[in-house]
Length: 123
Image (cartoon, rainbow, N blue to C red; front, side, top):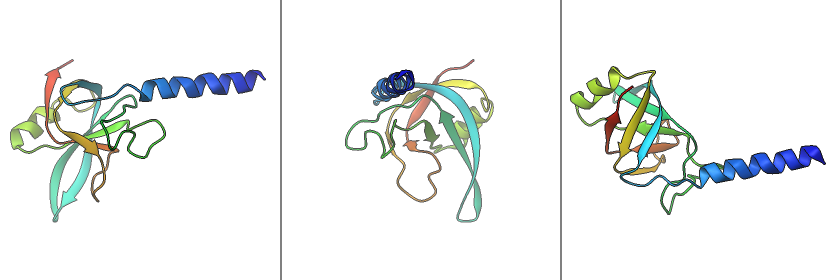
């Protein structure tokens, strides 16, 4: 009986965390990781923020995951953005989210993709 009650409480806690929606303009906080990827034979700087599970706006919502995405790939469009993130690898960062979606295309190595963003806080 105690094990069943513990499992219920743990399940309710994970659902409560996943219900915290992440929308455009919100701040995503977590550890910044560097990922290795290649596009057309060329090495591309790819970065990922590991955070608590978050729900995305409809229609994706939980991105076909039980608790919502926990890893968010940051898409860099300029060398300046890549350079800005390189100095923050392995640290806690806060990112203001612009455009985001569930990962669907081949080569997207995170559960969700943030296409436009800005760093709002440095450690």
